Image 1 (cartoon, rainbow, N blue to C red):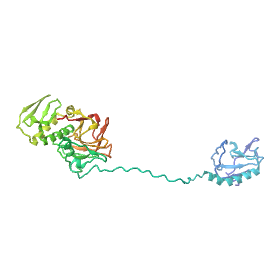
Image 2: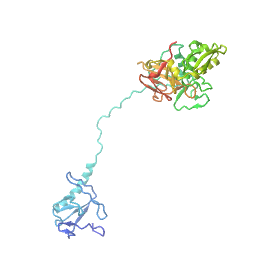
Image 3: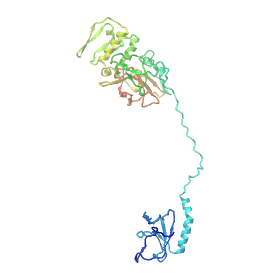
Image 4: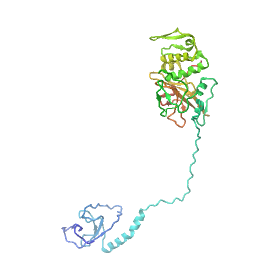
Length: 381
């Protein structure tokens, strides 16, 4: 390539000093990548307008001792040496011939797969059982156990059977508070019990548990079985209320006073419960109940943490598999007083709304966090 203005290589330096006159230099420019043998050092070439990209320059014998192939930058050391002109010519021919081999050496096609294809693993299909049935009118019809579980056998006419067959509001019904406000169903509940909440902010969590227990006995006319302890420990019996006695509260002192006509009508029964709700709660109910074992959980038992605040949810139903492992359904009211509703299980959507019964296990509901030791039961009558 003839030298033109701005294209001339810089003057060469040698042992005789700078700007020494030299014979004509042959310059070959190859657009290739050099493969540097092990043990050789690759020197960078400065990126300036006066130097061409990756040049290889061959000098005559008179230029530099050892007939060196060098970089056009005088300050850089030689790249490698070629001893004679025939060798230089042979080097160039071989380099051009070997270039395709270098490129082929870098090509790494995917090896042909000659082995037999591996069999596709067969994953057993999980049985699909529909748990929720929108057309169901009561709990046992609306919510069935997951595959492999059967409802726990309960005594006919028992509180457990009463809860299992409790009537429900139509599918899609919302929960309302005592002042007719809506509790949005943000993956919170899956069914609403068909029972009123009242017009006052009284029937909250523990009150809902007492309401269901009292309604069961009232429907069977088991009036002597309806009684709850107030926070101060006073035992409030429905049997005294129905005879016309009414509760008198003075400070922390409570006692009965005859002030009404005897009656067992439902309106009077509801007024009795409102009076109970006013002076009872999770603290008093937790003291009235007895500890229960979660691996033997049955409908009608209660997860309860007494206090202020405290919370309580009731076990509505229980299912069991062949290994004796149990699942259960939970229902609650909350604050403010609201319709009693069946809770979903956000942690295990595959079995929701069922919860697993395991020792030393926490039970996380959408509203509260319980532990297995919080399970309690009403004393045997």
